Length: 276
Ligand code: SF4
Ligand code: SF4
Image (cartoon, rainbow, N blue to C red):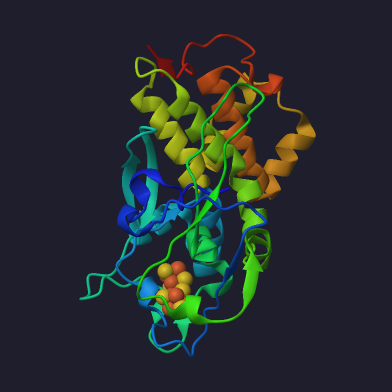
């Protein structure tokens, strides 16, 4: 799943038809350099970046997460979930172009393009969290924009085939913990809010992974929990594992559910995030 193509406040609502699609739904579409609208959809758009997008994009661009955030993103608040997110910062040109689009070549980071760009022309419907079993409502919808000529092509896909072809399955798998946090937060009663400190922790783990890594390995973090040694070695070597470890830590800290290893050895009083 992805959150950036969700309904709510992140999509151009007027152009989204209400029809809900399943993984088996079929559609005709092809995007290629020969279409007259080539790269039109890479201008004037809001692209929410997932934690995994940031991880792969900053590696491709060979910058650390702090620099990536400063140069390429704008912080936003996802209003209904009241959670911080980041969107891709567009250029200040006439068409508000994506910084990675070239007129003739298209996307210069194509192999590492964000999840939203991969899903397009599909979006993912809003989710609701219904208890600890984590049953989530998920559906897809078509973002049928008038300028997009890709719908005139004859290549036919199911939604499932499109997801596989565009490589979103892996991305959704890695981002699942992030999405779970947002869905859980959205499901809290309005009187239950996360503290500002908690939102900053969420931002650090999800978007500024280099900072989170320093926090884990250069503070008292590892002395406060019973993290198995092999897990420590794993997260030191593998940023995807570190990211997923971070999601689990936030889940336990915010919602008091999750892996036992995150139960503090002693109550230090500095990790409680939810406030009523
Ligand atoms: S508008 Fe549609 S067909 Fe044109 S470049 Fe974008 S996705 Fe491809
Ligand atoms: S990242 Fe690539 S595919 Fe996505 S909007 Fe920018 S240029 Fe287009």
